[in-house]
Image (tube, rainbow over all chains, first blue to last red; front, side, top):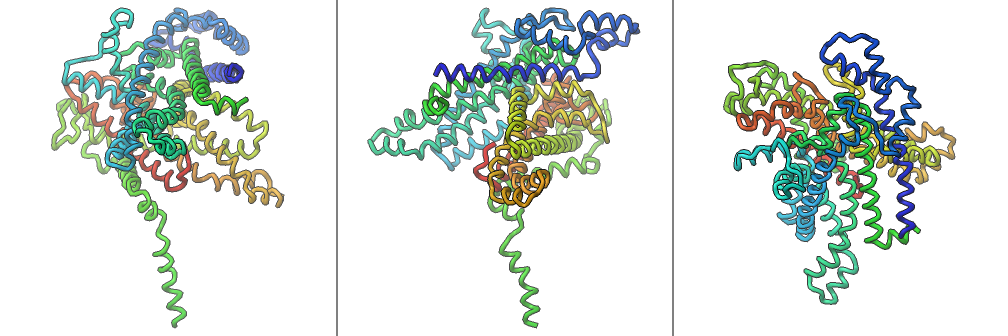
Length: 319
Length: 300
């Protein structure tokens, strides 16, 4: 098992290097840079020398290769430079917001699992009944409703019934956990709908598949209660494919948050990302994109390891 | 005479035995056929928006600001007094144009990469697959946001070509991966061996023998990604990075100051979002049915 984990971690390294290269190249193809926007953005007359001086100060005039080695060394030593706009260290800018986004992402994941497990199971056990069709419509809806609009509708409903508006500042969880959760549950719910829909479909189809297995028939023949057959034999085995989806959809979740954070005034990573992109803030943008990709890659690594832990067939198959 | 009669009735008989593909699809997947009908209605609404719209979608009317839905203004008016129903019709044009074009672009490029990669396998395939691994590590919206910021705007006939490219790029690796898997199994078919034995060039084998045989997954992917592209366009426009004012787009109608009117004009928020959801829903439902109809074992 240790060998398997080690192998998977080593496989991750070339992908990470590739991601770093792509992130760097993507931003250097941009025609304009931050200096124009920063100094001439409000129509001020600024001489070309000042612009060039600023470029040199920010390291934009260095040869491409040198900028690239700086970026790679920075990644390894976790010194990602300063934001070109606010002049604060990138790591600090991100650290302030990362916690919030991860918290909402984790809450959304928990919500999605809580919604998807019962719905998927019911849908599978009552296959082709009215109940199943209703759940199916619910899940296709999850793939169609944009999370940011769902967020707006949630706000609209809360405003109508409880006179609630998204707070201007969110209470950190270590100050008052209850207030914090009551504030963040709504954006989490908005992004969790799609997540739960995808998961429900997966749980449904894998339970239907598992129910046809021999060991289910054996369990029934032994006289095991149907309830136990489902909980112990069917659900456990059906969980495996669902866990894979959990990892893959995590990327969508982070993506959904980029947009949904705007709706709830959440000062998270997604908002910072959109700001950084609009300002052509290279150092900040590349750090955030890199971070999101790393989170995605690591999540999928964890999912794969989890999968191997839960299913010995994978472990032994991949000697 | 008798012979002529028989030959005259023959085609008719043959026709009744083999219904057209549309009828056959409708029989096999009635729900999806309804969805297809809906998709066609949305597309037509977009095409004929000029004729169908009851009001000028661009006309600002401060006397009629924030009017609630009524017989005159079905979906109410926005903070500039513009008729929301008319703007949603024009928004359909934007959504369907960008959705179809970016999905097509992404699927064609991704499809070609997938087929070529699957056909040659070996080192070329290995490098392509690592590259695709890297591209798949970015959530699609993150990739699209960066690309759209990178390229800027480039209007051709009122359509932002760079926006289409930005939405197509995240689609490419996903399509390439799936099409490659089908191409790998097609490559092992005897007719490919036969073509090779006959001395055909790689180009001819790829385009004449491989491509037609991976067409079913291609069509399925295309339908699925139209829905995703429409969602992505709405998200980008919502962030202010996609379609810009005054062009009516559903995501754009929800962005910016729409959120200032939660209390005064909820219809400004409800209807554009419904338009996005219903359209994407219809495309997804149609795509699902198409998948079951063309290739039931296919997994996206």
